Length: 486
Image (cartoon, rainbow, N blue to C red; front, side):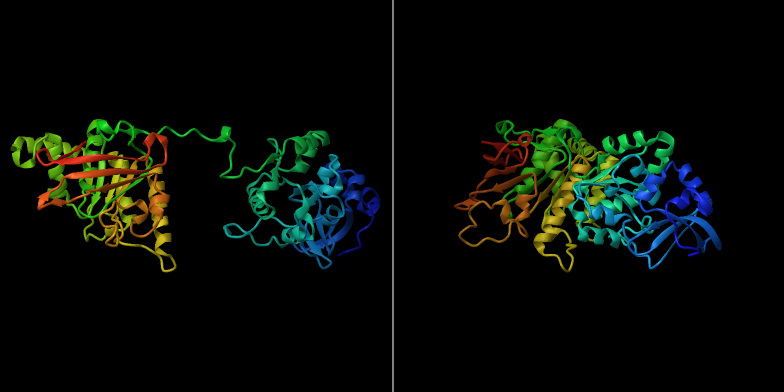
């Protein structure tokens, strides 16, 4: 350093007279600079490769200097990075603390009437561009919190309005905590506190800082008035009059259907979706791995559309039914029959965006290839998959339905209907879905005669628009190839 910093008088007279010009240009009084311990000196600046008049800001360890009229910075005297003026703030009763991006801006706040025991400046700028993990270079903030700054009731960020200032704001908010973090937004034409002091004066600066600071917006926490009103669910009647709004289906929801193998869950839900698709002129996308689109699903849809068993249809009736199926159904088929959920959802997204599909059905779940990671339990994997499908249903504005087999039951429970928790893999099949169904046939045969009675259990309905838990008796009519409600 070219010379020892002189007292505050040196800023307004003598060899440091140019320092007084800088202070006046910033509208900072000698009283404010004195209160903040600001001094003047002649300092060597490596960037300038010469000595220059400077304003010197003292820290508890070392100092920083700012040259003028050219702008350059240098530090020395064993400088340690810390909040500037932290000693004054920690020595007082800590309530509101105002933090600026530069020492001159901190002085501007004091000039406007903010007590000097409430003002801090960061010692350095924002983190390196592109660094997105836990912020580095903010040890001074952590140290200050440990020393007692954590007692503050509110931190008011008065940083610059440029991109670097926004980055610094974001980092300090994470470190100091969003619950107590408030932000001052400068008026047009001002990028910081000193700018506003020079253009608008101390009173307007004080009014803005006192009354215009806003709490930082916290993503995920809102007042009722701040929440957007979501569109209502588009509710579809499944087509069985006896159900009479006790069971409904809707877009933006996730449902699961289970039942013992051979109990008719695929056939029943195939009919339910046909009735919805036909009544509302929708498009459905089906990923079926145990029931082939040709001939099995085609046979059911032909029968439902024409009202005749396939064997009784004429060629023209088959052609008419097949055209309707082409207009309303898409089928997902993996070339190697080893699809993953990610692969299926990629195809479902195309079906939704390109073809307007409103229903996506996976039948059955256990035929999908697992993408479970090495450190993931089966329960964690199922939860991740269900959340992914739930988000897809909501974002794509469609209904996603999964048909899933229950795990093997012991002999005492084989004749009883399973619950959603019995689905192989995880109890999350009950926790996460919006709607859950169980299809159960009390008897398959009676003295060698095929029994066609079934029961549909509506186990779960998250929203009242979807109905409520109930059950309905059904019978499969062999003459029409359709279920009827008893």
